[in-house]
Image (tube, rainbow over all chains, first blue to last red; front, side, top):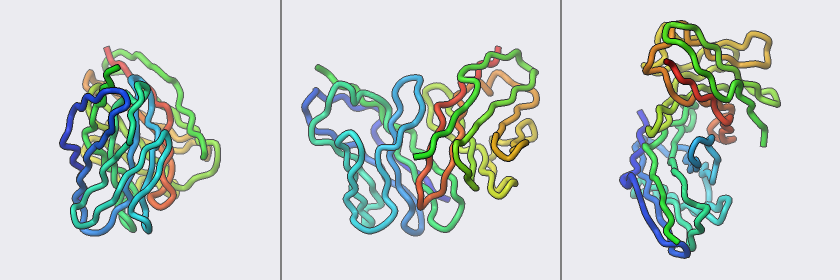
Length: 114
Length: 112
């Protein structure tokens, strides 16, 4: 079964600083990979997704993520964080060719200091 | 990107009462899902629904839960006898792995 680990429960960065949120997954083959963002009391917004091809994917709001098969990782990055990026970020995986369900990590809460 | 509308946005119910949460995708889809998120916790898979039947369900999805598409467009989640621990945000989603998934804005269920 797939599993997702987000090792950082809470990260605090200063506005304008760079950001990297870690995500590791466990799955026998290459899964579909996703990053979602959730503001307090809100739904889940898709930031970006990886299916195949170029391992560096671009998303909305200036985010990007890199798939590294050797490390089973799909880390999310942003070169310069804005105060509006403060939210909870979830990494998720779905099995290719298997169950279509998404399995989520526990999330990383991002706080942005002015 | 297709939209998914969930109603109600917030529901308060007495313990032991039945609740029905509704999801309306704008366009036709084959795959539907329900997820829940207990406050402060991760999003958990409940059930997937494909071709008008359950394709997979989690351990959470016990006999108290049921899903259906009563009129071919609405997709509902029913909890027969709510418990305090059912209090959570419930999300409906549509999609498939290689196309991506779209989530509704959620229904916050509060059981008192």
